[in-house]
Amino acid sequence: MDKDYFIMRAYLYNVTPDLQTAFKLSNLADIWFCTTKNAKRKLQQYQSKNILHYAPGLGRGNLSKVTFPKPLEEEVLNALKKSLVEESFSDILFLSQLPIPKSWFASISNEIQQLFGLQITENQQEILRSIIRRKLTTLDPLQTSVSLEAFLLTQIGDTLVKYDKSTDKVIAHIAHHWKTSADYREWTFYLRKSVLFHHGRTLDSLDVKFTLLRAKQPRSVSFWQMQDIQTIDCTNKFTLTIRLKKPDPFFIRYLCSSNMAILPRDEPFDEYKWISTGPFRMAERSDERLILEAFDGYFLTRPLLDRVEFWTVENSQAIQTTPIQFTSVDYEENPAYIEHRKIGVGVNFLCFNGHRNGVAQHKAFREAVYHLLDCQKARDELFENYGTVASNYYPEKSIIPDKHPEKIPALLKKANYQGEKVIFGTTQHPLALQATKWICNMAAKFGIHLVPKIITHKEASYSTMPEDETDMMMMGEIPSSDGEVAYLDFLNNPFLLPQHLLAAETLAEISTRLEKMKLEKDVVKRDALRTNIDRWLTENYHLIYLHHPERSQSLHSMIKGISENPYGYFDLSKVWIETKPSITS
Image 1 (cartoon, one colour):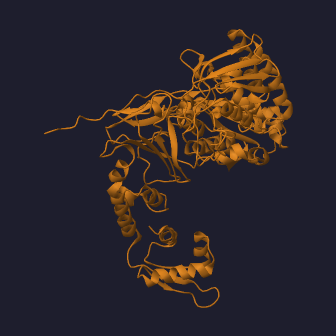
Image 2 (cartoon, rainbow, N blue to C red):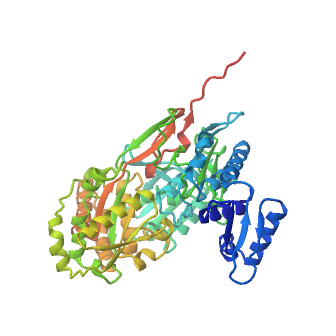
Image 3 (cartoon, rainbow, N blue to C red):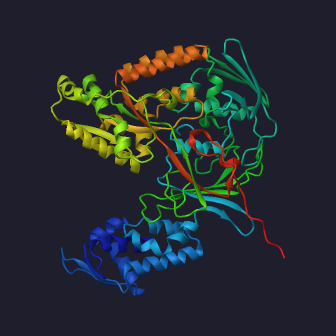
């Protein structure tokens, strides 16, 4: 498919739907990312193939004209039908994202939908094909801090140990046994002897050492967890001892994090050619798609699925009813798909910027915003699948908070707020944009001038844009299954919003309180200390918890073995497909 041709046609269609269009050659060069000379050459090539008739503008400032023999809708449908026959997913998704009427896809929407979700090939290969609504940020364990990417690490990598939420215990994995000293400073691990990397070599203690030292690099997601490592001694090929600078009973739980997936020391890390030991291996990755295939040499049970495909679709309206495994869907028309709902998946929150001069530095203004954000009202008035109102990091600890909007005028006066612009950061997720619009409208009723600033997930995590360009930002956090470590990560991870936005003195106070919490052996007292940290943050309005979202996934009724994975997704390595019996003669 000539994608440049359809990009041009969609652009010109939005100028005028007529078959003849006048345009500036420079504008066409811009959308093709080329020079005007090359744009002119391309148009002449199309004309030589009788695809269009091109009449160049004569003289400076005169518009060029192009005439097409067929309407764009006809050409799009012909291209779609050809792509469906060839099962060219790339071309189908490309066409679906063009700025053209959604209604054009109605006649073949069922055929498009059937290419996604559950697939069983003629040779009984079982495939799940799904859609994600944005490009992946990074799959480098040094940086991965977004829930979907963290989940993917659990499917392609393995850690020394794993956290079992059902028992609230750490269990064996690559390490079949471990022991620690009484003061939690020395940890010895005994490794399985049959763990293969995706490139065929057996994992050994030097690979574990390599991974831990890599994770200890400054600005790594895991630096705060690994920074106290003093020495790592590989006693033999399958035994190693780690000594810490100071006691840390949580150290074993840090090693359960997906960011601590063991990597091979003999291969330079490449996140587009991921090598680890996980149940799936990376077969292909690009901005357009991620393809995982079952790893036949997996040291535990091989996945029953043979292949999982993730296709990136940004801003598409044509296939919004496609069955999507990892985002909210609307697939009620197909009875083969069953909706699975889960409430309290993580928490959405608002964090104030402690670095940027402005009214958000004033506690009274932050308190005014707190009373403004009545999430129970938002849930009742506007949002479907909003989940439950939050007052705490954990859903089970949240209660409906008291809101007193009548206090807002006095608080704004105390903060000396004069109606100046306040930059409100948000992500490009559709629900986040909807919530932002609602919040800005509510603020306007009290004379607060919020100006939305849309920031991508990648910019929010891996740039200084939140602290440089916003006064506050709204974000979502989906924790791992280990709730205590998830909270520690929430406040310590350099790529999450609190570390971006909270002032240095605020972070120092948090660090002191967290260290005390970590050393408390009694789980009840430890929980009380954590609750006090959360209360201190919210009572000073450094951050405001909004709601615990509800997640909805539509899965084919033949998909079985669904078990929850950390980060709110289902574990692909456990999934199997209940096929119908073959009819034999």
